[in-house]
Image 1 (cartoon, rainbow, N blue to C red):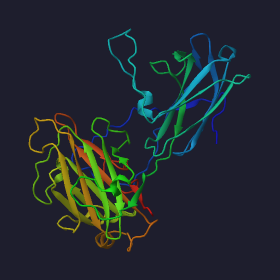
Image 2 (cartoon, rainbow, N blue to C red):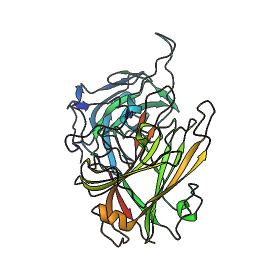
Image 3 (cartoon, one colour):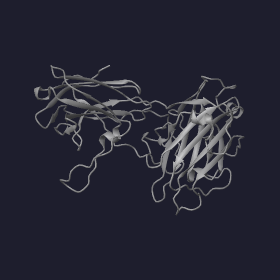
Image 4 (cartoon, helix red, strand yellow):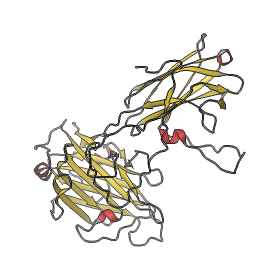
Length: 398
């Protein structure tokens, strides 16, 4: 539903983005997650381009769901009729990114286009009206999406010179709210139990969907050292696999139940539901050291508990020498159903189509830089134990 009309001020709230850094074990969350954008400001809304082309009467939705079309409309003056316009849909951080290099008066530095951005090129009608739809990708972790427009001269963008615009000349059409939704994931059926060696070379893993680990607060990708998670299952266990690119794989802990979260680690939380009761926390380090704990309710539980789950790691590098250059590491975890059903709200036996709540996290600690907390489904608060925006996992069928 289109919620803005010509003459109305367009709401603006292009967040520059929260840092995905999480330093140490995240602090408790005092209240459930309440997601939503910050209160935006306003801009009088008209855009002018070189050559006298003007855009007015912008119409965009107030809110859109991931996977749904974003309908955009605007009107151009006579100078814009017969011209071509490229409308873009962006996550807020890349949309607002500005690059300064070379000092005052230096030409703008081109910023690579974010792979999540979507574009459509359109021409106005004889009446000067433009209407276009762009589909918002799913999943979409940002709480907003930003709409831009470029006037084209052939393939060359003509800079906007008046109204809300970026340094590179893109005009800004508006901001659309996106409801924060948990990441939806599917665990594929595993034809045969994987050999737990951390190598992910079984056909079952090849058929599994790949889910990226993103900033735990803002959902932004971590392109410098990406990591992905896969899920699978059979009648015996739920399986989790992670692959991490890391030029400096590092871990010093060697004893089970050492505080692995203080260094580099991969963590899995099995909540069952989002009610802050009955969940498990399972961790494995690049060294293959494990930590586990069960919780009867939010952060109240038994860290001395030892489960029967298993994990294995495959290294592409070393964990002892921080002076060399590594490639990364991967891990496989097997979580037996009887254990999951005993300590969470999951019911056994498992069945195709069953849903429950899980999450996966990674602590990355680059040498000489701030720690980074990454998540399968961003909890939106600095608290890995918060289940309100954890991923909803479905057991897939054949």
